[in-house]
Image 1 (cartoon, one colour):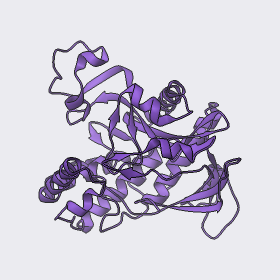
Image 2 (spheres, one colour):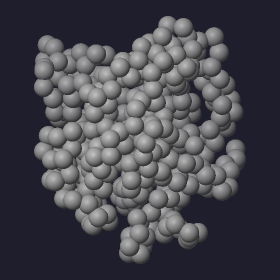
Image 3 (cartoon, helix red, strand yellow):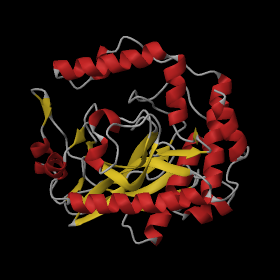
Length: 344
């Protein structure tokens, strides 16, 4: 189980073949890598499942290989495409997917053993990388602290104090299964990817980014950044996990965030002690060479007020309605939902 969706195995993957299973989306949420937070956002799971399925179908239409097979409605075993599910006046919460192998990633003497991971992977495995793409560089982006504008061919001596829109997306690689994500240079990413080509991974990330960006523009949403995860099977790379949702990616509308970033920033403003403690625990874990940073954190997050939860729910649902071009959820207009979020 992940922090926000349950993972069910119906047919396990083997060295020779893909399996079958499902993501069951919940109303849980996570910020700052904490895992499950103390409350839930109603309809969040259904909105993410709907948006994710919509994007997978867009990718398939554009000949991008994926592990997506369809969706299921509650109390049904039938696998449907998203249009069939929505025509039944029910938003799905379960996504049917192909499964690959996920070998153990040992952590010993302060480092992760990727050679051991690939020794157990054969030709069928989840690539232990996240491929991150950025269409703009926000004021708080980690890219600013890790790189200089010139590293990306940008004509600035230093990062300006405003958002930087990019003519061409920046693509980076980061770890997936480590307790704290690390950005990697190309050589390190190539080693961690195993048999999978990082050139092909970058190509797929750019294709996904282009498709999601164009679809977002139809709803006057700006697609700021996001990531993909992929599996490797029999020489082919397929896009896996979930793509282009308000949890995986960042979108904005009229200058206001329409993504999990709204809740992230709200916690920064209202629970700064916890946010600071999380950062200190992660730093301490780095220094001590331990994986479990949460065991070093002496603060825990507090539940959100009911009115904040309602604003978050409406933002997810209104954003999904706008993105897919339909009235899937009973929600205010995106304009109204964004106005309410801006007042948090």
